[in-house]
Figure (cartoon, rainbow, N blue to C red):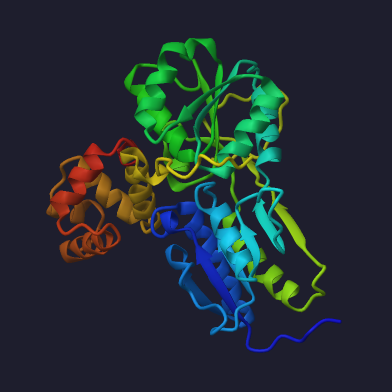
Length: 374
């Protein structure tokens, strides 16, 4: 017997670490918002840091959508919600076997690792390293596990500092002909350090990664990557929540979303290879470094958010400013009024939280990923 749904309200809990830092989380939440709007549902936002004190009974909540990926947060949140009698639709985490949930939605990282390794094989690469895997990420654990099963290769883990990760990799870089990076942040960081040390990509080392950010597309060289359809995760979470609310108690759902391989300049295609070308939980995970505290990750995230709010004209303005062009010279070369150039710069500043144009330019000059504008 199913029940009819009226005035659907969907409670959404987001892991506290990811509020404003995580691009994948922002995309997932954007997918949720889009589907809520389309179906005329409403969201109830619940603070992930205050679950213990939240009065679910008063709000008549019996099921929630939980977005998170950290073993230091998600299992304890699941246990707390289970103790309160709350069912969970879990997004971006594979739960431990001893905890049952109504729904699980995540990117199919296992298939993604296989896809990227097959791509390297077709590019003539056989000595592949895994780079940047973060211990407090369930997604990176899945990638690492599958990589080791498939290759028995070497992993260079990120302990909360991408620069340290590179220092452990650099003495051994000649042992490999390719590097699989767990995300586009790690890949962009790796390329930045390799170029600084005079290592040519892809001639000396081929690189591919998960994620297809603006920086991955604009990087020099641009990054071969497997897209992460996180907005689709969000849309599916809304649909599955509504489906489970009107289904029998015995029904549960598990969904994995696959990505698409986009081949760019950081790998070398062999003749005849066709591809789409674009011009386990443990008890001691509680005290782990936060991936988003890393200075390079912060720089990547802020720069990516800036690029997402730029059109081509904005990018030319920033590029010109970095090259030393005056406001008058920019306005003339772009056929704009000077006030239009100033307005666009003010709008970009509002997306960074910075107050002055000088502060923005210093950030872009010092940013390890800022070369994409130069």
